[in-house]
Length: 284
Image 1 (tube, one colour):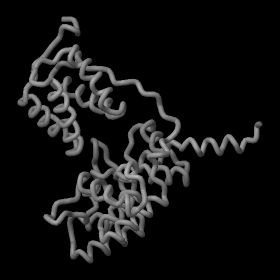
Image 2 (image 1 turned 90 degrees about the vertical axis):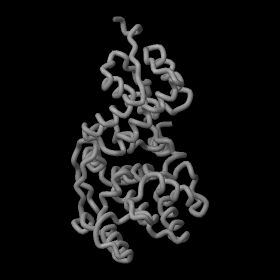
Image 3 (image 1 turned 180 degrees about the horizontal axis):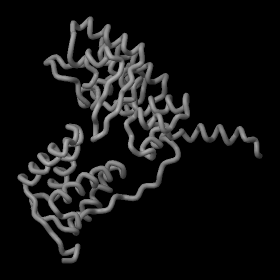
Image 4 (image 1 turned 90 degrees about the horizontal axis):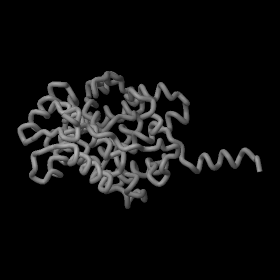
């Protein structure tokens, strides 16, 4: 059968089966949640239809272009393609959108060291020392926000944390100054074991409540809200580390990247820096 004539039907049960498949494949909870959200977005796009063919997939791809940034659209396409493979309809997979590698970082979205410090000070000024420490923890270690729950009293005492994420093992190194702060904080909270950062109900803090708390600091800190999100702290860690060491491969290991191209995105230099460099060449 020609690919353009191939079609399958899907329903809610297939989505639940896909979720089970991801769990059995030992994907992280964050990955499973992301894949399911993306596949459900496609399912909702079908607007009640259960038939999936090349025509509707191409229409969905066009819809993604209109409603999402290219990087986000490609991420959603990747999740959908995984679902199609699960449904034994790999021939229906759609191609990712082409994107030119960005040489210059988007300076208007970059968080600098001064702004980072202002966020910490703002959190303390608003009586949120835990939030200030969370910001410092993410930025000084370069972790993903989903890895914050690994910061238990037991792990921090060891000074390093072994994590398994996306099927890969890596070690998170904890600076000595951060270790002291974390243990002092946990002692004040009378927390002798388990996660250091928890909600009032005892559950570990997650991306949504940390993101909203950080956003609320923008006026007090005098930092553009567009720059304030947990992953931007990871970007700042990468840029500062690379500027200090020029150790690109080591940085990839610290960030847990299997591809150096992904790390390159984190270390992209702002166009103003390049401008200053070429001005200094004095070739005119």
